[in-house]
Image 1 (cartoon, one colour):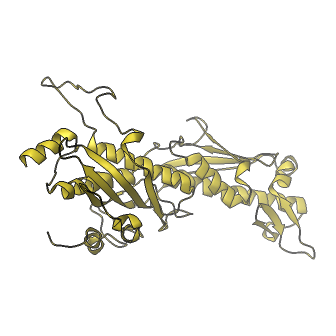
Image 2 (cartoon, one colour):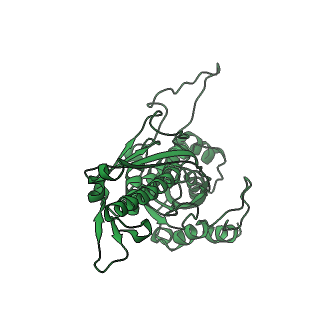
Length: 359
């Protein structure tokens, strides 16, 4: 009605660093504006539309959490590194933890062996959810790895018979700072002699991780509406999201795509249907309709990186944010295609057809 581009409207009202969030805290650095700018410049946003098609845009966020988290690291005598984690891997987190430990130690990722510990093998871990695993467990992995590096330096100092302040860690090796000839000792060499320098080398970290910070995203969707049946089809979809720092970009993209598909299902099909007795009638997947591959196109993704200052590598949780924008984006697109305003989900064929027929 006001004749303003949807993204321009959002840019004028976008949350940014210093904005007071509706749930209380003042926001730190966030990527709301960056996701909107990425959406505006994306080829999808200016692509031509076909008959009975329309485009919708929406932004959304998830606040994310940290919480009590524990992990431990063991330097094995064969040069491999054992990593024990307290958060089950439901989205690729083991690979991300291994990558962070690899980066800190300066050794190939293939040498890092992450496992999921049980409740007796680690300190307390809060639930695996809230998009917290890579953020919170990643923080403890980095801290425990740095502690292990200090122990590796101590062991190298003992073997060289020098003071600890004469040893630094560089690219998987202890390095002697002083001396006429440079000396280095690899992680594997130090670990092999651990029995001579004090025994097994390990470290652990248990902490209440704070500062998760929200993750924000902007989605673009093209829909086609069959005016005879009320069927809404997703023609094209692009998800853009601030991940802080994408430790494993392929897994981040997978989280964004999976979340978007969940949101599409919520927007178009998924609902509970009760009879007059209050009994749930669609108790199986035949009647409770979740999306299948034929329902959605390939979900394009754009990762925006505005680092979270409260994580050693700038990580933000990414798993839940992409579920939020599809509902509004699809509703906006269907409203544009039909010139009817929808205020109830899901936009199933009977509901869309009823709106088209009766207003």
